[in-house]
Length: 93
Image (cartoon, rainbow, N blue to C red; front, side):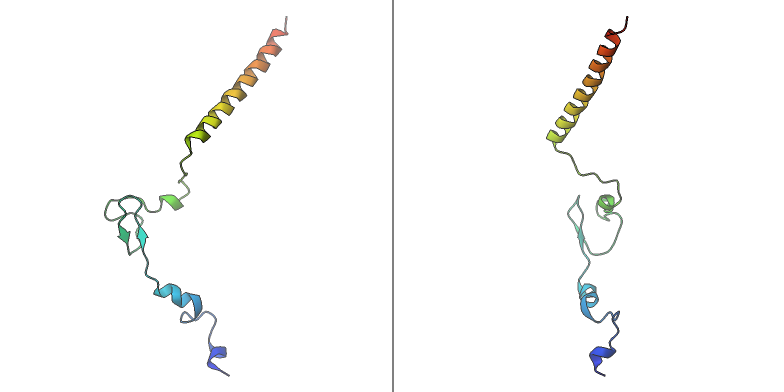
């Protein structure tokens, strides 16, 4: 049997796992732009939350046009309801 056949599939010295282990860890703080080489939930330099983008509370900013469209649709919807309600009430004696 050759060495290749005896090698376990989960052996960390083979394939992609070994290459990942050699890559240095680094992440850039979104606030102060400092490069961090160790895991930390907050930036040791400025204290910014490094996990905010992954915590489920992050919402990407909306464009001003999206806000205008949302408010316009809301006003049209509420206006339609009030108009329909006015027509129904006006028909009553």
